[in-house]
Image (cartoon, rainbow, N blue to C red; front, side, top):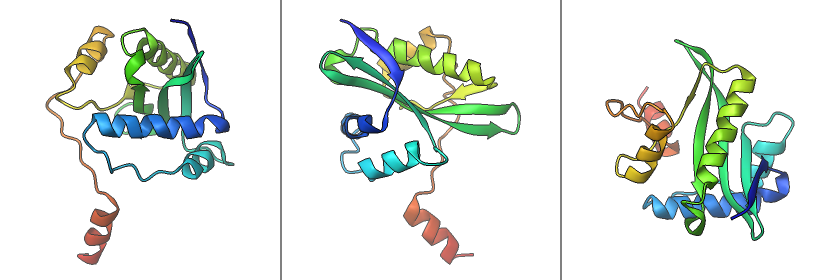
Length: 159
């Protein structure tokens, strides 16, 4: 299967959102996606882009994405966060995820970051195995903490 990895363009955001929804369904969070195509276009391609996105493109179009953004570690300094690496179901196992992750690592290296971090669901054993084979340290003793929009409002009401 032939595909190429390239930096996403604004016009790709319709397909990027479709893949985000596909991932949400896979992760059993069917109705969790609130971001719109307009949000992705504005946030990724505005005056101060909030993220960088790479796409895997095959003959049938965009079949995978890797979306990253800058963070800062108080222990390490500049880092990037891989928010999502998504490969459409029919393209899994064909090297697309490997190529996208390689692009992210090259991108981070070019920026001089000290770490690239991301999360993986503890039941997604194929992804965990893939990341570990690539040399990633899956830190199973850390818990992810989120404060969603409603949580933020409740928090502020109690302060």
